[in-house]
Length: 373
Ligand code: SF4
Ligand code: FES
Image (cartoon, rainbow, N blue to C red; front, side, top):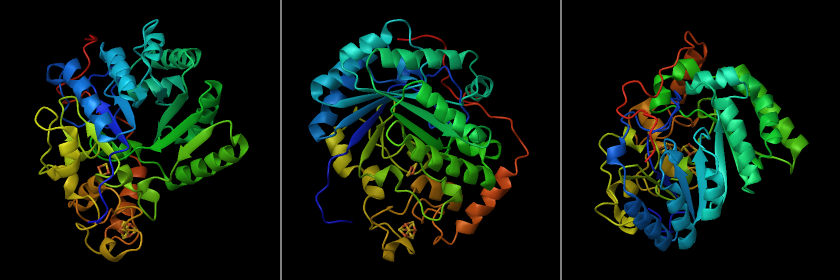
């Protein structure tokens, strides 16, 4: 492990709830969803927000599920502002009653990140399994701008919408977004179950990548577009989460603290909870955060690679999903002995065979019952 002193996390992701009116088949929430009765109370979240600021975090992302399900969101945003944290709301935008956004802006919210499932309403509403979602999202985006808040549009792409990437860029422009994040589906959890319905073809990835490059040149400062080639088509992995235990803490609705949103797929990993330990203790010494922090845990080819402190060996959850061992080189890396297996899976899954989705709701314990609290 690096001998450098440990820096504080840059950001904390507060998953306030797993409840959500949408049922996207690539949801990053775990398969085992937490119920409303398991969620941290307002007072516990406030304590955790204070601990995050004291630890030195700069940002807090309020996420879910759908964080607007929580009626105490305004209170938590105000608490984050008072603690000196930059706050970002990550939302589907379908639950904003009149005036809620104004109230959030008054409470000190700094930024809104709004997800779109597609530019086309029919496809979008099929993915989210929520009729009427698109019009609500568009109305919500306008309210964000009216409230004077900066807007990022988040578009998750896959085989069934990747051909409309140009239309997604136009939609983001039309809505006055400053930033567009075009993110390929990451295949663990729910998305792993839906891989055959979602994996793009190589031709689609190539065309979309080209279209995005052209749009970046054309739009220059008007719209920032974040995009990277998907792992299954890459030669080198991304530094997942900026490196395990280096920049982010994910807090699940019941208070367990995870190094990444998919960490629960690592079945043997013990996770500490904010109900028993402070965020600072967890960051500095929890088994989960220590397990893959730095480079000591690495095997070859990562161990002697000159990129080991650039990508930190890629994604642990992806190594587990494809190789069966979380401590191996991410197979997105062409130097991994399992890289060819990943390419074969991409080919096999993108050939399709199914367009049907397994929705997030199926088999889960916590759907969304229409209530807020
Ligand atoms: Fe990154 Fe490991 Fe591949 Fe080197 S061998 S590029 S450190 S994943
Ligand atoms: Fe868990 Fe990449 S999603 S390390």
